[in-house]
Length: 238
Length: 224
Image 1 (tube, rainbow over the protein chains, first blue to last red):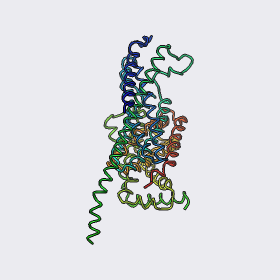
Image 2: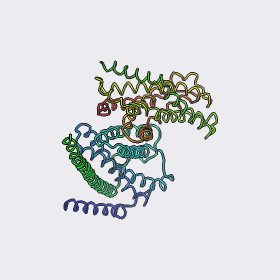
Image 3: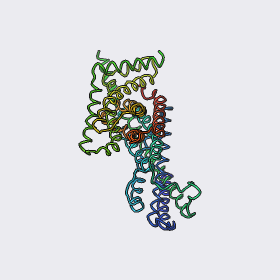
Image 4: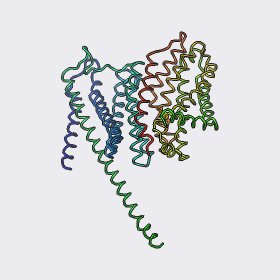
């Protein structure tokens, strides 16, 4: 428990340091100036989201193969955290879009992919809420999660074929792309901080799910015990 | 029983059930027709505009109608408690799924065969010369819709509020299919009709990806 508190404190410090670095240490960007600073968190949130989505996929597949409840816990925790990161990413993106592009939103490949993923993973959470039986809930939501994961590259490809307005990747993009070293370092630091925070929230959510599961089992056991004496009594009286 | 025989048996059962009652097809066709008609009230399109928006409208009508009509596919088994009987049969779960997919494909294809000419008349779009190519686009798009829709019908059948849940699960997933199908149809409705091979390949890819996923996951989907 103490180590956990220490890790939480360290990550909190990291997040504040990332905020400070993004706002004050990173140099002014040549064309976009101050508004570009939202990128440090915007891109970091997407990194967090894709990490969580990857973990959700692992959880979904592993549940179907192994049937160990912990993979289902991983699945649901990851999806919830992914939805959270995605919401943050969409909001920071919209805030940046208005001053930079002059529009809040456009149906570009990356934006659309994230938006559709956001809707699909919200549907995943809705679906879970509507199935009562734990085993069945885990299996059916895992199947839906796998379908949603497969859909992501297709949404991206469809919009890539259709039209695109989002800035081309600047990291590892092409010969003309690249960043000033200081911007790159701050960016990587922010990414690391957000991914750590994502994983922290994810493990907390995972523990919550495990406790819920244990509670459900305890309730079931109590119910069973409460009903048993009655059954014996009727048998004896016969 | 071979997988093909089993699939054919399930298909036969679904078709017999539907052609005795004829509930599903009537509702699907009328519902899609209502969408098409309401759209013309909402936008009052000119000939040029219908050429532009028509394909989108047509596919929206198919998607909405499909997300309604695919629901009973498994919900009916669930409420009659016949799914257990199906599962007990010595056939592979994918045969059950494939039989239902084929049946739904036939129902939706019939609905489309009725709807497309009505749509062409109402929106002044000439289909002469593109019927064969349009049929190919419709087929590829409908296969994608039916494959994902039938799987999600099975997923939703175990949930509360399943009638509302199916469109919620299905429609966002079909976003790329909608883009591809609409673009491919628009290329056929243009002044110089052309078959857009890139979008056709995309539709075929969509179908293959999700058909493979359905095949791989069918054991889990239909387990007790």
